[in-house]
Length: 288
Image (cartoon, rainbow, N blue to C red; front, side, top):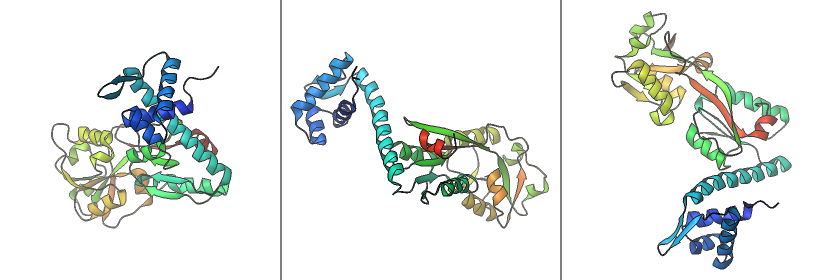
C-alpha cells in the first residue's frame, strides 16, 4: 500500500506552507501552479482532511496543516541528513564536521579525535559554538556531531547520548580571603561578585546557580565569559569568584587562581555533558 506522505508530496506541501500560497510556492519550486495544486489536493484526499484553508487573502494552514508542517520539516531534514551522511560514508571525501562547547576541550574532544584516528577517517573540522545553535546546526545537517550541554531540542533521526556530568569547584584569586577556607559554602559567596557564563548560554543552569547562591536577591555578577579559560583569566585579574568545571580544574592550572571544593553544591548544579548526532554515526564511533 502506497504511503500518503511521500517525499515529493511533503516537499511541495512545505514549500507552499512556507511561501504562504500556491503561486509563491510554485515559484519557489520552479514549477507551474496547476500541478502543484493537484499535489496538494492529492495530499488532502489521501489524508482525508484539509491542510490549507483557501481564502481571498491567501492560503492559510489549518490546525491539521500546522501539525503536518512540523512533522514534515523533521522528516525532510532527517532525509537530507541521511543522504549527506551516506554520501560521505560512501566516498570518505569530506571530514566530519564537529561542533563543541568549550567544556568539551579538556576530555571529550580529545577522546573523539582518538576514536576517529583509530578508524582511519579524515581529521574532522572543528567549530566552537554554544549548545542551542549547535543542536540546530546538526538538525539542519550543517554539522555531523556536537558536544553540548542539554537541555536542547533533538531533531528527528538524531540521538542525544549522555557523557555524564561535571560538578563545579570554586575558583578564587590567589590571596582572596576565602582561600583560608578548606571548602566553600554557598552562603560564603552571597556578597561577592561572580564570574559566570552568560545566562543565554545555559539559562536552566544559570537559574539553578542563582537559586542556590542568592535565592532572595540578585546575583552579583562581576563579569561574564563563555569560555572556561577566559573565566579563569578574569578570576586571576580580580573580577570575581568563578565556578569552574571539575574536569577543567583537573587539566588546567591558571597562574593566580586557586580552587576549593563547593561543600554544599546541590546535584542539580552541574554541567550535563552530551554528544548529539545520527544514530548510525554515534554507534559507529562507539558512543551508543
